[in-house]
Image 1: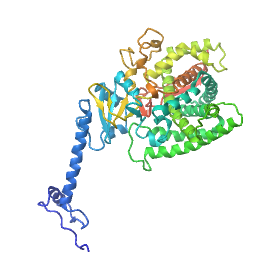
Image 2: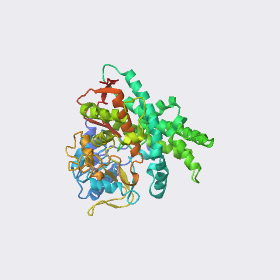
Image 3: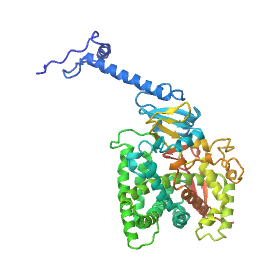
Image 4: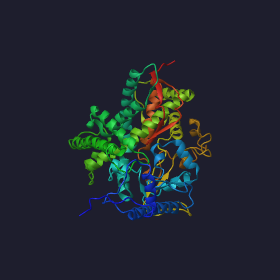
Length: 517
């Protein structure tokens, strides 16, 4: 039976920890005692030794993995650079890239190698399936679900891409373009109706516009209009959680927990859309969205995808089409407002190609002939790429260089921004110069390997042509229907990183009907 008396307080002779306990006790107006159930001072000493040993081991492992790579000589115990990762900034990333072609960091004992040189970035992109697998960000798997197609590798991933590529053919893109034009014109009217004398942040309206467009293109009428706002709002919680590093426990109140709950709501409606699409096509209905086209193809083949598989594909597409696309559109509008001479050229080209008829939608063939518009979009995406980096996880020791092999379990990150701002390829890299893409013999056109806006390798963005088409159509149509002014602030050129990048002030624009001369 345990004694009813408290265990004696430790003495200075018991252990070094006891000495500090006595010093602390002397500052208190009451007596602290050890309950009988607590370990003895010698046990506390043993615990301290174990903890110190683990900390030493952590530092040893860090230095062994880092080897000669630039980075902190010693990592912050346990959390590493977690504090800095909570508030990512372009400036901090630029400091990391400036350390060298490869550099190292660590967060919550996750060893990270960052590639800033183009050759190393492309090598990582092309290593998927051999040395690496897609990771997106650490929290992506629990948010998008572990069996989502974006995390697949090897043959199963190739089979998925082969099937999905059928829905990004020119025939499909042409069908999508007419839908995109219709929705764009509806939202332009709303923007004009809601316009005030003061410029307003456009991030919210632009995100909603892209979600409405994406859901219409991907799911057609199988997602009701009154559900679009709900999915858009829920997806914002997903976006906010898709940071490079998050708190590792998915407990209520954390971003990742909120994102998982939001995903469940979005998936509920996407699962229903998949079921409705299958019923529509089985009943002989003609495809008018990507899901319908998918059903028609798979019903003619042996492989039938489940409602969940179809919903998960759309869930993953929504990130690229909503947030990455929103970033691309916002910066395109901002760049054109800040460079009226470029906007004037875009308008002149649009009026010529459209033959003065601004009421009809532009065709895919006409859009292809918009040379200056396409150069403008390409330059805007180069200057402010929506995604700065794309993490991969090392699955087998990866010899990135002859002298350095990334250990299994390492997060390796190919960075896009440095390649897109290489002064040897893009003179005046921080300037907005669409003309650099009009010279077929210029360094920009002669160095396609540097244009990593959509990644590279087996996991290159499957919808890159769709994205370029959408941004070009929206900007081109807006240029002939509306005027817009950009109210600049001290934060207009500063970057806010929320999975993708945005102007830190939200991009303040004032829209008005086009006044044609």
